[in-house]
Length: 460
Ligand SMILES: Cc1cc2nc3c(=O)[nH]c(=O)nc-3n(C[C@H](O)[C@H](O)[C@H](O)COP(=O)(O)OP(=O)(O)OC[C@H]3O[C@@H](n4cnc5c(N)ncnc54)[C@H](O)[C@@H]3O)c2cc1C
Image (cartoon, rainbow, N blue to C red; front, top):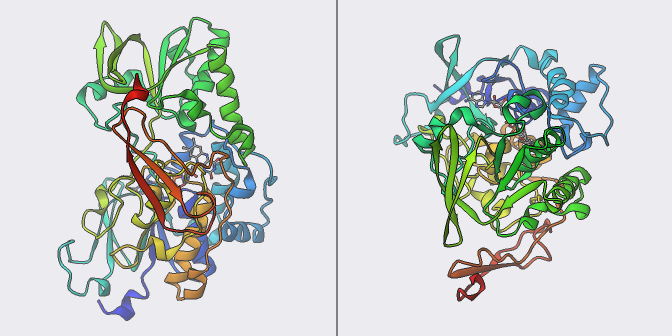
């Protein structure tokens, strides 16, 4: 197909979450055609799975600028900037009205699961004139696989459907799969499934915000059903590391999570199992035995009725097999983002402003954005994704200056570390220092990484 014909093709967007819909709104504003595929039965379907959870960023950070402009033109009234929506409110008060706008509605396909993308007629190996042929998007709709041509692709499919397992080495085992009826991945809405958890031995695995949200829900249940025993297993050596910035967090609600969970730990409502590296799950008399080690000591926790696994997510790259993509080997994020967001180095929750240039892939006009662009890193915020797609759409529509000028101000977590001691027990400890004032400074400078050998005396 000649280039001139390609120009008339739409941009394909994979995923109707907030970032995919923001991409659509920016394309509308630039007068560019698009088609958006959403696997779920409605837009925002990943978010609805944690719809009961209150977001920690208020509305002012959660609405994309182009989307707001389109919505306001239609008479939509913006929610109060300073209030915190739940996931469900984000979908009902923002994403639904946005997706129903005339400019978007006709171009959104629901129950449309993207299963593959390729250059027309070319597998990944074929290099000749790849850029000159359009993309083909394979989409499962109504039991059929349909093919759509596109001139560019924005993959905003998130990571929610691809949770990490409980094993600390990240491996999925048949033993874990066979326990699926006793494991919840994510944040259960405990008040709706009390029978499952009340007066039971429940272990939450993970130390991020999702784990804390799950623990807070379980602690509420324990007030009513005091025989509920809550374990909190984590790899962190000290539970304090999981509390985050607390009062220092620029997002009050995010800081509040740490404050509330500390109270529950201090009052022994929650039993913490730190430094716990899980290496096996086993079913014994209908209960789960969680096996692992703490430092060098083998540890077994018996008689667990239910597990809540909140160990993060990883991107699904299965449908990207036939295009050329660069992901960071550790973070699985877009390669250029890894040094900015790697959780081994950063804890701020901020990121340098970035756009099309950093998100560019070897496959021209293919981009990974939103939560998925962060790979396994947990600190993604919507405001980042909105700026990503603004810049990409500017580039795709010929506004190169607009694509280059990226702006982003994110609230810090209040725990911006410039020195991190990785693991007391490892033989090597890495100390990372940034040349800039702190890891939150927008100016990016090369890392200065110093590796020092450490003896193991601190482990005794
Ligand atoms: C519990 C929780 C609380 C959070 N709170 C905040 C907060 O307060 N503030 C903040 O800024 N961020 C927050 N985040 C982080 C982040 O902003 C959200 O995860 C957000 O939903 C990411 O948006 P997204 O559009 O990138 O991905 P998603 O919202 O995950 O959307 C991806 C969409 O793609 C669809 N999809 C997936 N695969 C396919 C496919 N193959 N074909 C077609 N469609 C597909 C999915 O069904 C989904 O609708 C939170 C995250 C979680 C989990």
